[in-house]
Length: 174
Length: 174
DNA sequence: GCTCACATGTAATCCGTTACATGATTCT
DNA sequence: AGAATCATGTAACGGATTACATGTGAGC
Image: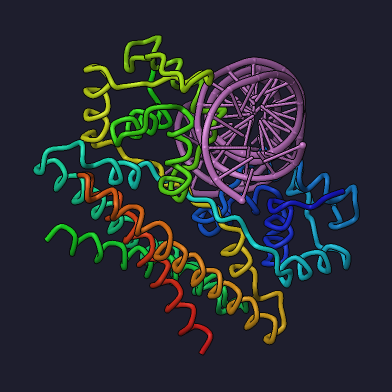
């Protein structure tokens, strides 16, 4: 069985303390969503696959009458995760932005509208950066209290990069 | 018929001077590839669709015995393109990076390996930025000679952002 | 003569999302 | 009582890539 990136995402979230599939998805919604989104329809089958191959262990963990499965990493799972983290293979970054495509094609617009477009892009960058600073970074820093520091590092990198792009676009505007 | 982003990509490349499907794909490989990749298997059917609905016009343009189709924008095509460029709808930015996911999960590594990971990421950012400065920006600036200035703007934005991230990671390393 | 770039398409496949289906618990 | 959240899954669908299939022209 071949582990792909979503597999390592699941393994990683388990390592960061999530236990159920639902909890994994919730955690990604305020963290990896910005650089590696996922959905419940991916998480649940992935957990099942990982269990079948011995990377995670499932325990029944009901809350009253509500069924719940608690997963934890096996030694094989931990080993696979750290091996992947250390691996030096070139990650194919993949970025898709309608907004940048619009900017690329902006010569088709009149000067006025070009300016409006740039302004809109800058607003978007500003809003995204702000949201990260307001919502994402605090959560990541709370997590850092209990150990893992890199989620906060990544959150700051994201917010700062948005800030940089916003400044760049402001210069362009002028 | 509903036009989606790949449709506008094709319309936009036609406007920038590409004529055949092959030429469109070649052009994207050194430009929009970084923020909106595509493939021949998308371009050819898209051109056919656009022609069926009157957004582009096809002319046969053989090179000797080699068949070739030359497309050009109709008025409807130009109008659709500019309308889309001016539209103020929120573009769903989509970013996927295995590298950043690794960084996010780096707490699972020993300090040594964390450092190695950050260094690798920085190298990657440096290489990408350099490549853009060496290969992409010159092409975009050549294009600017004949009119369209925004491709060069976007290329510079990309290179500078990579540069910023590289610097950020260098600070993290220290 | 051979390899690479030019040129056009279709078919198979993969991956991911949305929608569907079901039910318990907590909060207002 | 009703809405939102917790919780788990499957099915249908869509969009994009890779592989397949075919042929010409140019350069070495």
